[in-house]
Length: 410
Image 1 (tube, rainbow, N blue to C red):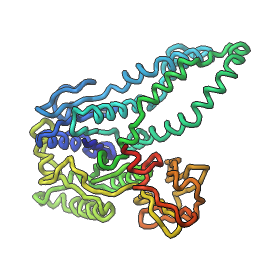
Image 2: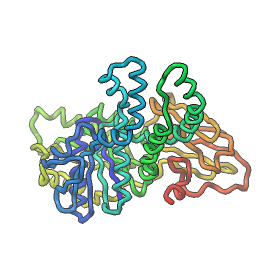
Image 3: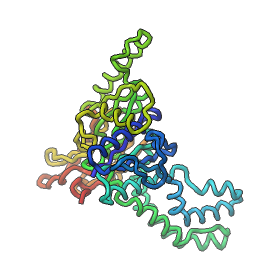
Image 4: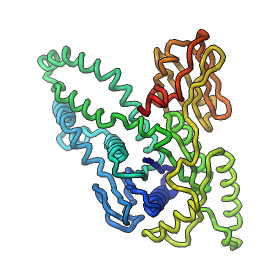
């Protein structure tokens, strides 16, 4: 079973590429579903069919769905939202404003993750293709399981204990509506829906991210940053799609400079993203709308390549023996030293790259060892953990939740 996530800067052709990939998988006899998690859905427009919140057959073997994440959120958020409404009304916020404030922006995106896992675990599908939102939203979406895991493991139990002591006092003294067990229970069920999502998305045998770019300087620069941040959180990028390249048949002098720039940017893409394969797609002469147009696009993009295959192998995080200690190696392509910060807190390695921060739970074999040194070379962060000789290396490569890759797949 494979999960393929397509992301990139808005307008680069993510939806077209995702739809064409799903169609090519279905034509190869694979049971395929393609989902859109972009709030501004355009998947239905690409296929030129009506799609809704439930799977709709596009062609034999291929189903499409545009997730109504707002409806899912309202179902799971109802107890928490009711309590927040009481709090806002107690604070004097008008009813309509309280209704809006009680829904946290971006929260609805979380529920698309639970749908991906549900389909992946159902046994009904061979391939789940995800047309993700533009880059920034995708990064926030994929970092949520890590953030929620940290919150639920550390803050949630403490908040619940404190609530039992403080809430009765606040309720009597200030009249402030306080959360009851049903609110905390709802929060727990909310988190449970995401249980196992991160393990699925970071399982490099099952899930791959594919970056879609156009031969433009700003687009390529954003894709480089995206690759870095995805690697930080343990997601594997297995290919780059260079879309809308000017075909060789275009010889008009007006396009001469444009073609030269395309060639320059394409060379930068191929050099910069090595060893990732770069799939090429030429600028189409007409709009890519409808099954047949997408089928032709997919054929040109993949050729003889199996679209559902893992196109590049390599673990985002590895733990290897180094002398009497171990070395944790984290792929951070394109990361710069001046944007990298490292720290250690108990059994966590704290990593910040640019505006993104990760608290990586260390494997048991590393938690008892002090950090000896760290370096960033050739797009790889290497952190050395000192220790006595005679201990065995952690089995496999470290997964995103700190366990070994073998343990994560159990």
